[in-house]
Length: 334
Image 1: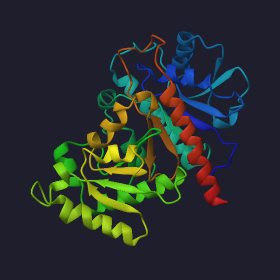
Image 2: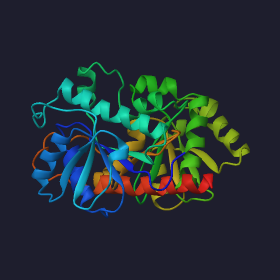
Image 3: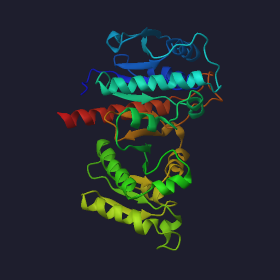
Image 4: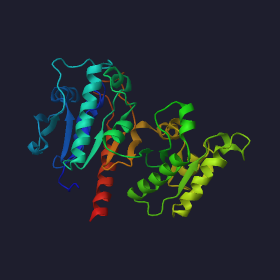
């Protein structure tokens, strides 16, 4: 169990991307008294500080206990080191490994209660693969190393929120994977996640898989045979779930205030509406973990990395959501 003084950890992401510089930018908008600890390569973070014009000094530490959070400092727990700084915008095994090492350390620290939660900067999936790391993304790493039986991605902004039944897989495998158990897990996690965000009785809309939510079986029976029975089971558990709703209108209905959160069947069905409204507003929350994890809702942006122009708004939003979720967990344990 964590306490209020434990730092929130920020993993640096892929060092060839914008992660390090948006971390530096975000820290300039956070009170220096707030305990935020960066996990990564101090040299990479020093370069990011120069690029962004930060006046704060990077201080390398080897143990969480060494962090003092003095004004004017950015404390970096060293999880990797580069003899030669990586080239911006270049995919490499070294960068993939460094990004993974920061995440792995953060998970270990969260499991030990040394940190209050994790905010992850963007990683590059091809870089992970080149490093021989088989995970397709953050969510799968966190679920496996974090010891979670089932997790779900919650993506959202100020207007709409969505939880995914299936995550990083082909559309064919997403259809196969959207079974009854996956529906129930996503609905339950959506309910719990929305409550943690302050919705006492969250209204959950479950999207259909097929066009027009199957049109009463004309376009497929998944809604009849799988999704609707899961919704009815959830209702019996006291969850305010409804649907299946057509995927092409359910997010509009949620934005109009009819629902608090939408359960989407596959990655693009859920993420396109959120990302269309602006990457700077979105945040990614992993539900089902034994610790809090949030992330900005965008990628490594290799095309602008190193220019100092990357927007830290989504990362700041992710930090804010992490604070809120940590407070909710602490309230629940008191």
